[in-house]
Amino acid sequence: MKRLMQSFVGLTLLAVLTVLAAPGAVLAQGKVEVLWLGQAAVRITSPGGKVIMIDPFLKKNPKTPAKWKDLKALGKVDVILVTHGHFDHIADAGALAKLTGAKIAGGAELVRNMAAYGMVPAKQVIAMNKGGTITPIGPGIKLTLVPADHSSSLGVPHPSGKGQHYVFGGPATGWVIQLENGFTIYHSGDTNVFTDMSLIAKLYPLDLAMISIGGHFTMDPRGAAHAVGQLLRPKMALPIHYGTFPPLKGTPAQFKAALGNAKVRVLDLQPGGSLKF
Image (tube, rainbow, N blue to C red):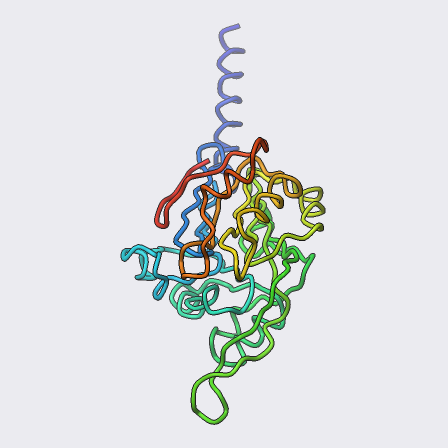
């Protein structure tokens, strides 16, 4: 009996060590970290330590804390996701891609034009379209491009050499990020509320929605509250894209008030703040 027990313990230990050696073993200990850096710039760290940067606008972002205006402070970045071509969503995408070697993924017209105008390294571009899902940082993390209701243009040097003009930036989009442990995040990008948000919720039940609330260029708090409370129905919501520039007057307090009794936890986070789940 003693030998049988020793054999059983040995086999059990071997099984545990085998599991711990597997690529996804770190999931048992890791957590999801979300770091909001102002406007729509968010860094997500997965339970397995993969780093996803969305809409990097840091150096000239008035709400980004000084520490994070140095792109090196972000550390390693495995992939950069962009939602559309406006400067306050892509301003630092090229510099960050060159610094880290990270792939940069987004709508085909957007990232291809960014590469054509020398904004990002062409070899690091992943061009895709709405409804597409990619796994550039491992099969356990799925990145899906979803619709948004907004405009998109790319500011490039004018042929005259004076100032800028604007070229087509492809359709505006949002992202759904499914992490190794199943935690699912929606990033709205810039958008108005639209009824097909309910389809996003059906296809990808959401743990966290990062939702624009500023108004003027995006949903205001009332529109965002309808999107979250009636259509997306996430467990948690993080208000973003407000207070950065004068027209973006919406506030988290207004968003909470508009939500009323909706069963969603609103996260209180200031730029430079992070949460773990």
